[in-house]
Picture: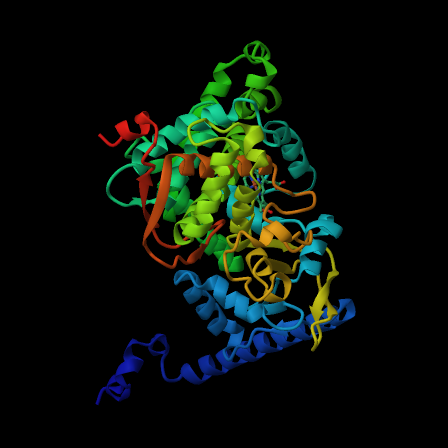
Length: 527
Ligand code: HEM
């Protein structure tokens, strides 16, 4: 009888069947030897790490796991990410004394916290030793190069200095330019069939920020093709997965999985860079200070076309998603809360009337509209989660030990994810109704500095916060000047999708009803 006939069916195809019977005992011994050595190395490394952690503080609570390398935790977390329940999953994990936990996926310790004391340490007190780090640079440099978003230290500071002048202030003609895109948006909203709010606010903001900062609108509202936006979404989606997979993530070849999208993004932005190159220094100097946009600034200050492209894309990334998602979530909540919408409309008609375009000063006067915006920024933080890596051995003030009130030991190179979304929904910070969208709370509430951080605090605070807030308020005012009712068709309950920015998990279908006494030109759009 042939020897192979004794081999069970599964054995024939197994890799072990490549070895002869005489070789197998040696192969098995060699394998066992390797496993034992690897285990000893891991145990020793773990013991050394524990000694180091204990010398710096304590361990925080560990995420329970029953499988080596915490593969079960990785599986569960990935499943939650795919089902858009990742935030709820982490919220439950963090809901214990100290509000800080640690994962050990693939033997790599990753901290997660939503404790304000820890977030303050990372973002402000010990800012210089908590950079974004090499890992984040490795993930994002394929699309954002060495721009403000991907760098730390002097390189980041140089970008901040370069961009601040253009982004940090609002200009006199910002609202005038925005109105052009609002008129385009209105053409979609007056249609009879339900419109996807999420899609439309995203296109609207892309058009506004390209018009204001780059000097030419992307015109995504009037156009059918959305290749630039789709490409951006695809690249961000892949990069989110890469961040999540830790060190293995950087092995995913972006030029294979998202090569076409990267090409589309680069080609699009390069059209602006070409405009940069076509202009001479003298041409730019001749432009009045108030009319200069970001492209003009970059022509003067930055000579490398690749660096110009990276900064432009970084600004688009920074500006579009947080503003458009805040708008979409605010309108979604207003549609679900007609009493709040009525109060907002009352304020709008009182402050600027229903048929005049609002001025920047009038917008600033609208206390209730600001409550609506703040409450949306609280419930739907634009990032959701943020991450930094300790560059030296250090500690975080709380979250360690059994009671969670001891400092957490943090050896150099440890990553810490902080859940800003979690922080802003903590019931012990915001009260038992923390999960309820309730603009009224802001009429009597002044948030603690480190409990409400929609724009970050500290040196890395958002550069476009003045512009971004004005944009959100302008849209709310214009919408309720034109429409008296917004009906949410589906879904009645939205979920949060975690990406580079938090997004709506599903299209948000709404119907917009024009005011009866709406201006004639609004009615004409119905024809
Ligand atoms: C409601 C709207 C906005 C929200 C909620 C928001 C929020 C944020 C947050 C949380 C960060 C910190 C990101 C991080 O730590 O990685 C940030 C950074 C930034 N934001 Fe905004 N943002 C908004 C609008 C804008 C706009 C309109 C612009 C540009 C015109 C802008 C430009 C930037 C820039 C350049 C940074 C990077 C700052 C740095 O790393 O030093 N943002 N923003």
